[in-house]
Length: 251
Image (cartoon, rainbow, N blue to C red; front, side, top):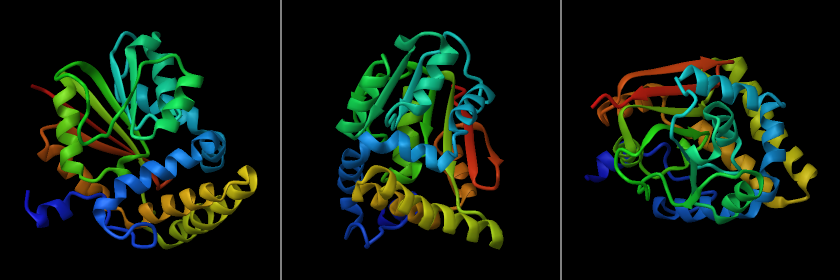
């Protein structure tokens, strides 16, 4: 893959305030989530104002998840999205979580009775055509290469399978953007540190906002999904910032 193509499929350029080169991104992200895993659910409540579970459940159902489906939740974290998938499928054994952070997996293991695997989106340790539904919640900005990740997503999905990617994007209009920068970029990091007494949680939330600010536009994400072999790709938006990308592997 050429350097130009590699840059084009990165979710955002390197952020030198946190790591010096693109090759250091994965280690930085893994270590940051390892340091904040024990506090992540509390931080998430600040982000979602308590509405996260209902939105996740609605997004999963809207993308077509039904009882009995076999699910792979990539970047499972503490299991917030996987928990809703279990409620819908009706069987914890049908939902598998994967994450690069060992400490996040430890939290998910403590909270959920689902199969868990350590690994990354760009090289999934999952068999070809083995799942009906693949989900990723608010972690697309942390992968190193969208094309590599989407190729893996398609590989592990059975024909007819669905991918659902939940993300937060930079508001386009001036006032919503200013409000988002104030809340997500300043207030949430400060509240996270106060609520957890953990400096790393403040770093995580500042980094979170900066990846939102720097992320490539939704239309490029949709285009890379289509180029990676997904059909019927669509993007649904709520409150100007919450995006749900959906696509199907037809063959």
